[in-house]
Length: 478
Image (tube, rainbow, N blue to C red; front, side):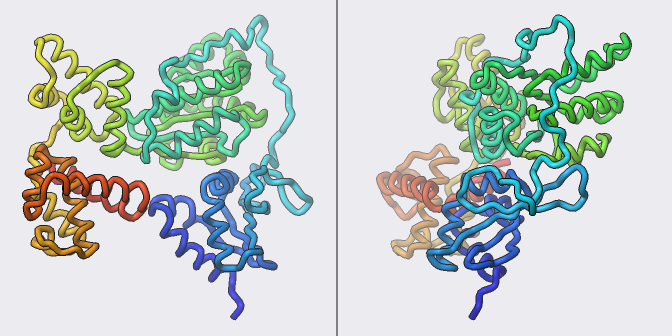
């Protein structure tokens, strides 16, 4: 029976789905469309050049293996990349062979990614006496990639930012728009991009400016009839970083000026990096022509960090500041300040200041006292029994099974995960935890916790399940 391209790709997706996380599958594989099967070459359509580059960098081996499993050793993959141009509403396509790791080549049948842009235009604006080397980048030197803790919550934004710093203006994510709620590290990340760009490309002119400062500068130049000088200055920049672009919403004339700056920089291969508190599509009050340009590149969100990432952030800050806090205090901070990295670091500073003023060692009681007036802390004490019931409900097994001697795989796994969570979220000793599981000793608890950690490193499904249970336990404590 002849295989159709739809059937081949559907079979490939079934395999791919079992080898990556659910979120990665939703983000990188659901938007793909199979379009043809020609001489053992499967053609898939991806929505952008960025998609193509990301798949080639992260998933090309997995895709190649699945396609060869379906079509044989001679099977090949080609991408059809949708290209949205300024002059055409309907996107055009471009074909690239998988695994080439090159930019798509232009042929007479396909369209260049930069169609409609005026490439090669020299900057016609020169401000007398101004040297590019004299432009202060306005960057905090402490905001670097080394000081930025990576987690699932920010991995895409960080990876894209690092790529931009390595090749400013030379990737498909231009502009790079990073959005998130306040306090999750947007400013730190974009300044890290700026600092890394300066390190790798000393001759590049980098400038960081908040949208509010941009607006105030524009108003001041308007009063002095110096709008052209204002626009010309910004058109000198190689990497322009504008923070909090949502503040542009009521400032129509500032948007007009930024539109001119954006066009000039983008057309001349310069890099634009923007931050916002929401995705571009939700930016009310922004001109549609600007929003359409924001969509030319990549929009990457940053989520609130999970428990492990919050722990890593606190440990990183302690290490940099030469601090040594009890582990239960660090866990208490990470557990109770969940949605704002800035607030969590502030809570740590407040705790240190309070300890110094009252000349008292930092312990869990002092942490509770200090945080009571800073953040809303958990009011319920999580018990081993609570965790056991939660895990039993999640896996739909009987509560008594966790105490039993059975070696059934699903029961053993549920028991091990329960022990892992009990150690993470309660203050009970290993012996006490073991007693709650049919009188098992502390070595069994240690082995169970290590087994779960190993499974989380190697088994995507287990990792997702444990993370979901961790979130359920955290919610139960609020």
